[in-house]
Length: 148
Ligand SMILES: Cc1cc2nc3c(=O)[nH]c(=O)nc-3n(C[C@H](O)[C@H](O)[C@H](O)COP(=O)(O)O)c2cc1C
Image (cartoon, rainbow, N blue to C red; front, side, top):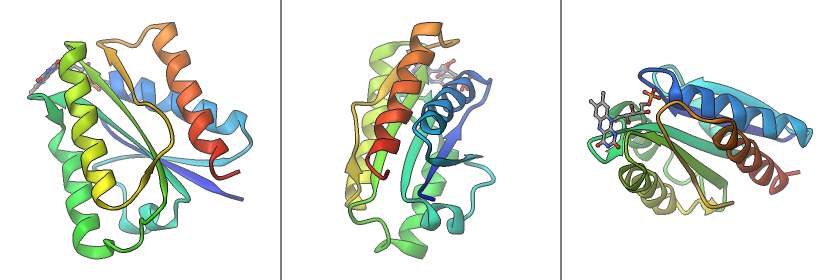
């Protein structure tokens, strides 16, 4: 069964709620999903995934350092394994414009690895609303459809 990895950094739980909604959308499409915090994800999880959703709390207008570490470890260990792999991005922020910058920082690096964007990223402010969660679910569905 094809499998999506949802990997995220969340300090106070907002991005985590978004990650869970992305995972719900993936499951609805009938695709496998593994949800891991950036702090515990392993390179094997990343390489084994057919598509990846990256999520982060916004820190100083950028992705959180823990997610950046994931990219930097990928770069060193498996930089050639991601060509064409679909990805999607979600971020949580205090200010939407800042969250968009954090999402762009993730997209920039995913594209450096020649990954393919599956959908426009989702940015939410603070505690995600039902509408935000729905947008995350849709994001998960779109990402999962690319590998079904
Ligand atoms: C150290 C730190 C830096 C932050 N930097 C930004 C920022 O640059 N822009 C912004 O909009 N929000 C910023 N925030 C707010 C968080 O991104 C926001 O509260 C987010 O919802 C937290 O997500 P989480 O609950 O998943 O950790 C910052 C918060 C902390 C603790």
